[in-house]
Image (cartoon, rainbow, N blue to C red; front, top):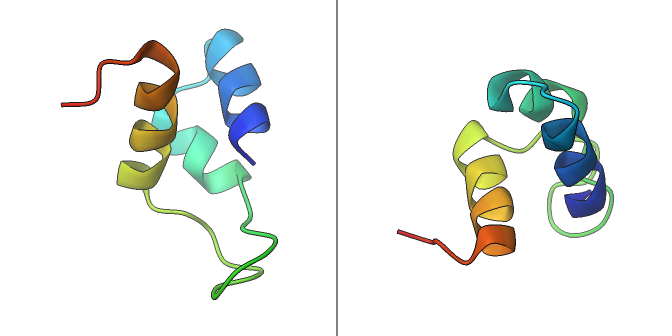
Length: 51
C-alpha cells in the first residue's frame, strides 16, 4: 500500500484522491480505505519530515 501511495504522489495525484484509491489488505481493517491523515503519515515517513 505504501509503495502505491508513493507512486501516485510521484505522478502528482492529490493526497485525498490517493486515499480513495488505496485499500487496506492485511490487518484489522482489510478491505477498508485508509484515512487521508494515514496517507500523509505514509508519505511523511519517506521524506523524514514527520511533524
